[in-house]
Amino acid sequence: SIHRPGPRMFQDISSAKVQLIKAVQRSVPRCQALDELRRGWRAETLIHYDIKWDNCVVFARPASKRITRLKIVDWELAGIGDPCWDIGSVFSNYLSFWLFSIPITGEAPPDRFVDLARYPLERMQPAMHSFWQSYAQGMGLDSATSGEWLLRAVKYGAARLVQTAYEQMQMSIHLTGNIVCLLQLSLNILLRPQESIVHLLGLPLRRM
Image 1 (spheres, rainbow, N blue to C red):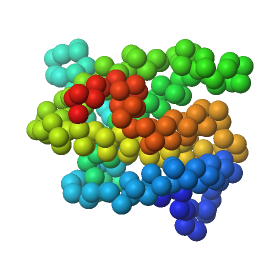
Image 2 (cartoon, helix red, strand yellow):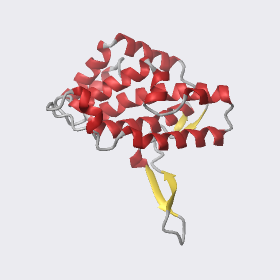
Image 3 (cartoon, one colour):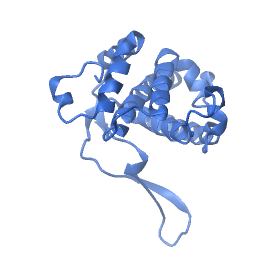
């Protein structure tokens, strides 16, 4: 709903956040896609609502040095919602981590951005693939449901990228280059979700 802000959103808001809202509103296709996601929201199970790396704690089993366990913390925002939001948040974290590792200084042309990433997307794709495969199997999703959930989750991931951009601009005066790219990445995913599944997440469409 960031493209339809109410009066409360403008209380104690940074200049960069105002610029971000305007940038989101200027894209009619983005606004339409966000409205469609809002209409399709399914409040059907308990979800975390704020899955991100800061809320994930990894640790080893007792008497082991291998870090193989994970716990999700900070459940203060938890509530009934769409399970695909948490899935999309995981994908979003990988994508934003990749994009924020690109030094966007204005010195390199945009077509070189991908090559400059400190954490290349290709190195993260196996982890995203493993996460989705484990989740779908753990939930017992059949092929049709798996494909529908994945498509919805990818779109939610795009929305979560906008939320991440908004949160990053809390104390800023102007939008940074990385934030502008994050908004563009979000729009690309919303407009071409199936292509994003293949080229960004590294998941073959035949698995949907």
